[in-house]
Image (cartoon, rainbow, N blue to C red; front, side, top):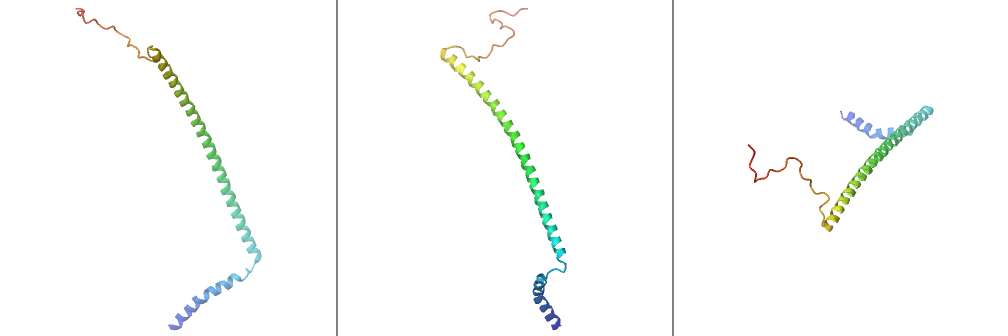
Length: 125
């Protein structure tokens, strides 16, 4: 049993040396290694191209969306500015009228409809 243990320890101790020695040996068929290296290189180039194309397409979509949003924001800003200008114009007209002592330009209208009954009159039978 002791000898089996010793053999296992020696085997484990020597395995890195054997692996290093095997790595130094050239492959039996050098064309196979070249073909494999070429295949790996082509696969990496292909994958890099696919990633670059996807990134470019994504960037185009982001740019189109940003352009659309910018146009919407500009339109909303323009509309808001027009509303602010109209409100300021009305306010200026009201202030001008108030300075002159006139009625406000936007005074509430009297409700249309029946005239008020005179409180001194008696109701009709």
